[in-house]
Every structure is written in structure tokens, then in C-alpha cells.
Image (cartoon, rainbow, N blue to C red; front, side, top):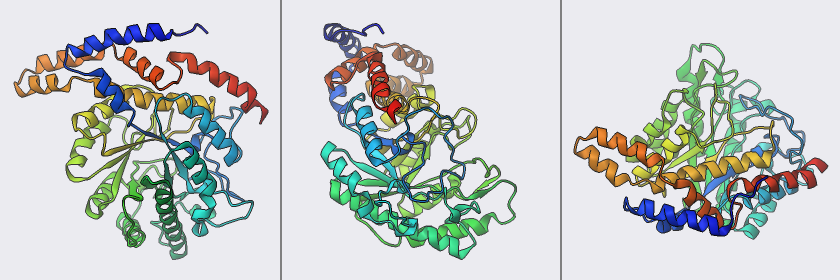
Length: 424
């Protein structure tokens, strides 16, 4: 592979970009300093195709499926943590990890999900302390015999519903403990696969059960400096094409009424729906938002995040709302058809590029033209801003953060694959 560029070339490109943005009143040095604070939570399930480490595990199910059989998937916590470290070394900045409950390490003992405890995550906590990274968390309401009916917190079977209530309650205790041990709030997101393939006759009944379950779960209060609760909606999925209990309307109403953070997943809406358009409305009434960045291609197919219009539009809207300190970025995709380290790095670097692009936008000129009613000028400026030398600023950010510039990181992934992944 051709060497991307020397430090001297990167600095020369940045000097030009700095002047170009300065002409529009943008201080690129200040933006780069701000970028050091921006964090993305990297999801553990990309590293092992959401299999987890349970003894007698049920495996992924309930609309969750990782396709492909690329070699090198992590088989245990130690391998997954090593893979994480490799990915972190190729991504600029200091970031977080996002764990599912099924990644508990129980020392070979079968522990039911409603019985998991903080002690089962101490390897993760100790490792996070060593690296200085935060941990986010998720209950795992899928891939289990108690989820075979397609219902969990919304189940009319009281035995099933009670099991999942206990599971999520246990997860909240774990998440709060993680936040306390690491000194940074743990964002715990609840998503459930509940729904039906065909037309239901009692939509209200299942949603009533879901509401009762959530009310009981959130009855125990935790300090938000340790735990931030979130709930996530979904439009449809495999086997739940006609009805999901936790629809967007249900989640938004419940979250706003009960001061629970709303999670927007870019893949959980109709393909022509703009998640970016929803952010300003939500931020008027909510303190914060959890944003799961994913990429739908047909349905909620969870492809690796790329720097596309949808991702850019979300970042631009967050910037225009002055809300980067109110929006938590987390990845949510799984692709087993390509190198899993590549998927993490591509997705995270793309998310960070979108944030940088938005922070560099000379927004004040757009608002000024809009307020004057000069929409032609606004549109013209939007188009001109797209070709400002953003890439040179990104290269400088990578250089300053001591990670590979341009495509140089691919060589390291290939070497890691040959030396580590292919030997598993």
C-alpha cells in the first residue's frame, strides 16, 4: 500500500485548511481540542457476532442476526478485550465500550440471567480502569428459552414477564455499580424484541404489560452520576413485521413522562424517515438522547456505519442544537462477513468524522441567511461548505492523537489478522 503522507504533508494540508475555515470564522484548533472530548461507545457484540459468554447460551434470536463466517471471532472475554485494544489503537480519541449482559464471565458456572451480579463483570471493570475507558450496558432480552414466545417484558405469561423484570432489575444494579467503580455514568439501554409477525388483536394489552414492567423496574432510583437509564424503540424486525410493543410512540411517551432517556437507533425506523429531524423536537423536552448509529440497507439490517448523508445529518443537527454534551453516541451493528476489527474501526472513525464535519460547519452563516429569508444563499452555502478541506483537519486530528492517518490503519489490521485472528 502507498504510504498516505508524512507528518510534514499533514501539517501543510492542515495549515491550508485552517485558513480556509478561518475565512468563515471557524477556529480549527478549538474544534480539534473539542474533538478530544467526543466519545463513541464501541459495542462488544461486533467482536463475536453477539454470541456472548454464557454457559449453555441460547444464542442470538428475536430479530438479531449476524451474517457471515469471517475467521477470528473472539471466543472469550480475554480475546474480545485484546481485539478491543487493537481497535482503540487505530481510532483517534478516548472512547467507551458497550456491553450486553450475556458477556458476563462466570468462571464456567451456569448463572441464569435474572441472577447475574456485578462480580460477573469485574474482569471488564478492571480492564476498563487500566485503559481509562467507560462502560455502558444492556440487558439481553433475547436468545433465551424465556424469550421463545417472542415476548419478554410485554408478555402475558406472568412467569415469563417476572423473569425478564428480574433480569433488567439485576442489570440496573450492575450498571450502577459499573458507573460507581469507574467514576463515569453507565448508560444502560433497554431494548426488547416483543412483537408479532401478523396483525394483533390486543395491542393495548401487551403495551399495558410493558408499561407495568417498566414501572416496576424503574421504581428503584439510582443516582444519574452512576446510571443513566435509556429505552429504545423499533419499527419492525424479523418475526415482528406487523407489531412491536415498544414502538417509537410508546418509547417516546414513556421516556418523556418518566424522565428516562430515549434511544434513537438509525436502523429502527422507516428507511425514508429522518432521525436527524427528530432530535430537535426531542431535545426541547428531554435532557439527553442516546443515539445508536447503525446503517439500514433494506430493513433493520445493522450494516457497518459509513460516512453517509444520514450520519452527517444527525451530527449536523446535534451541532446546530448545541447538544453534543446531551447526546451519547454508541455503535450498533454486526457484520460477520468482514474482519471484525475493520468493522469497529470503520464505524467509529466514520462516526467521529461526522462529528468533526459538523463541528467545523460555519453554522452562523446558514442561520443568518435563513433569518433573512434568503433561502437560496442558505442552500448555496450548504453546498459550498461540503467541499471545505475537512479531510485535512481529520488527518491532523489522527496525527495529533497518534493513530494512523488515512488508510494506513488497514495494514495494521491485516498484520493483526495474520498474527492473532487466523490462529484462533
